[in-house]
Image (cartoon, rainbow, N blue to C red; front, side):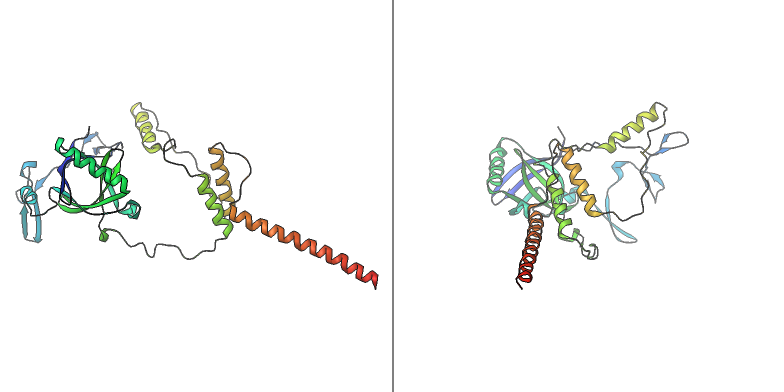
Length: 305
């Protein structure tokens, strides 16, 4: 079980729920040490006091804010903990909103909130069930790691999850990033929609979403440990230097998506687009029939004359 990273309470209205905060995710990345390549000795970061020109221990190190080049104000952890801030030890719910109204780019790391003691059980379950039945998420404020933060509370299975959120001024404006206007046909858009349909699943279970990078890195490390040459990257085909046929690429992608799901059969055109094509064929047939009928009528008229 992950260790507790924060102790406090959830506060909404006059209801207070004592909670413990634990990490909701794990990092399985392979980590490296910095080493001296000549003899593989570890390279470590040592902390020096630039005035006394000596290494200092962790117990001698504290926080300081630089007011000016020559003035630094020390601030202790106790002073930070004792700040007159309602959110210093509480996750204070400010509002409830539909979960889908939150832009995903604002949502950060997730943490599980665990009811802290028997007294917290009933209000914890009360909040969880109320969120479930209302299909809402809670927007809250809390102080953590030296600043007040915005948070989002939602439900995952039987647990309440806290997501750190970014403030408005932390989201960069994306205007100016879009490409210049381009010409796209209805057929190309419809084919892209068909590809989306063929690649749509009810959920992520069963999909091949393995971390291939970590697996490949483990193979490199194992080969090096055994004194073998590490596996190299597969050769990529050289670029053809031609413009890609977008429609052909889409159709091939749809075919591959169908094959990967064990689906065969005819490449189906989306209903709207199929209707357009059928309409064009019907019109063409009518036109041909009209011309043929017109030709016969004209022939009769000429013979009658």
